[in-house]
Image (cartoon, rainbow, N blue to C red; front, side, top):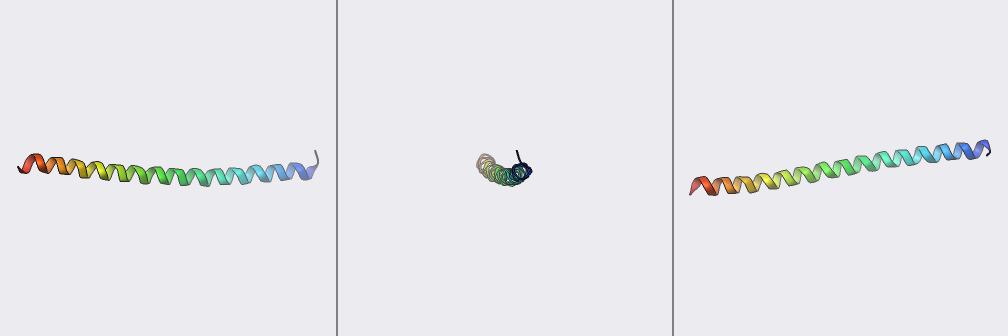
Length: 56
């Protein structure tokens, strides 16, 4: 293989690594957002049940 081919392969691997890292970061942010929404929903349901049990 020529030197140019090796350099191009190394650059392609670096680019794929960067894209993979940013994609992973996006997926992690999405998962954290989903977790926050789920916990907020559970909190609202719990408060609703709590007030229905203790007020009446």
